[in-house]
Image (cartoon, rainbow, N blue to C red; front, side):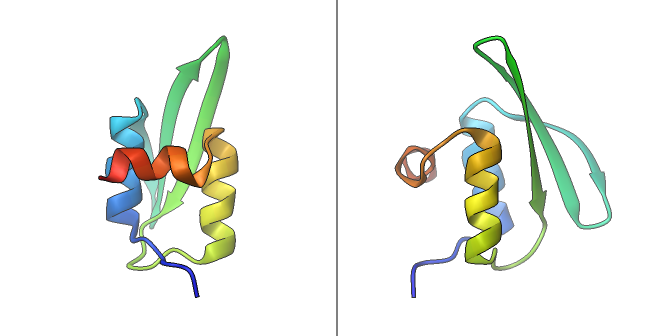
Length: 74
């Protein structure tokens, strides 16, 4: 099974990539970034482990690949 990340690690990586936290409602944290004339909004659930499908959705919302995100993790 592939390595799963926590919300804390994903949020830190997204912040390093230029996203800023806009709001939180319950356990869901909303981040925002303007990129190439687009407004990107990413919703990250604040869980200890993010499910693989949810992680894939976060990458799609952020317009990033897994490798691009992992560059900001290390």
